[in-house]
Image 1 (tube, rainbow, N blue to C red):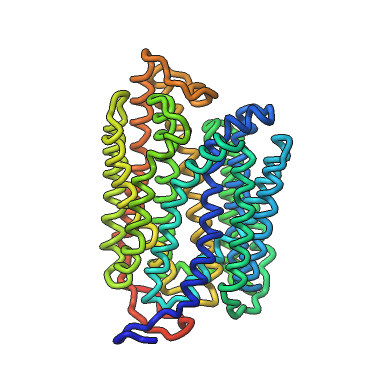
Image 2: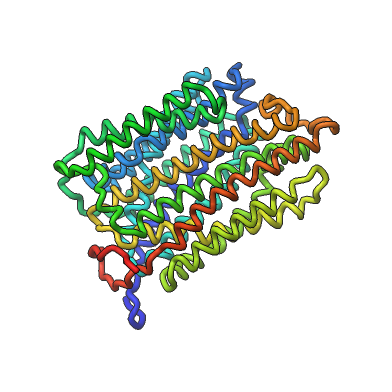
Length: 494
């Protein structure tokens, strides 16, 4: 059906989007849900702090490393097939996590869970790219982006409720009915799109896999010991392998894993810089805020997570509206103000994080964070994918998701180092971050602790500068009216 000159989007495409968003929501929630359960897991499995940290780190590592490869698998074997395979792996791994009787078993299960998430994540973006016309994709990407905002709240909040009410195992068992429902919906509504008879770039797979592993592994370790020689060695090895990978891809032998022609589209290249920036910032700002809420204000994990309600509600409410807006206006006029307002929100929050601040003084900048981020997530994803050749949808979405995940890992590691350094400058040991109790800090050090957490908030604000500059350089994408699966359009230029 058509209305005026605008192509209608079939209802089946919206049903496919709904099915994909359910799985995407689940894997995003599992990136944050464990943080609230760490003390309970530590006691139940008699583990030390370093081991428990790896329950989250192992998931993020296994999620980030294969993303470029799994995106390409969707092009070769079909996005629906790879998505369903990943959903099966993720659901089985969730059952294994909940049944784990030792910390080692739980970490192994989380690795498998992360790999399942890596299979699923690029396929969601690739299917949206292929089934929604370029000038109607903004609304779909807006909904997809809203999922991220809601998951930011649901992860810690659901973790607190489930741990308090049922036990830590249920943060994993809850995925089983969701996974089964998601499988049925995806099987029913996600279309089996045409595949491409790609050759598989084995050297590219090896080089990118090794490079991503060492880079992410090193960045994860930097959060615990930022100046360790092991951290810098691991990061250095990863960078070397990734440089060799890029050089090998530039040779264009057979079919490269990551076609560098993707980056000829200026908007795709700039959107990757933007998504790394906001991935860094959003992950980083949560750490000092949660420590401030629990250690300075004496809130429990569930109460701390409730502080995120304004962010999640406003992000979820405005993201679809922004998606429609991006279909009609230049993306720089949406993403640029979004980045700027997000930086303002973090600076405002830093000024509000005093020992005796009223909660409404915190909720206002947190709400602005949700409003501002709504203007960024869907704008970046829509702009990145608008001109992608459908034959390269998997490769492009794999690169984009890998960049976002790397930004998040780097933000977590950098913020942990900044928080430790800020505490040290005020004569407080970084061991304060590792306390098992959520009781308030003694009054004698609350002020210094609050100032340390507040000053740490300037890091994500500064990181957003890079995203703002990237979005300011966006080119206006061409408007292309498409029927069915779109044909590739020329890269965006000024």
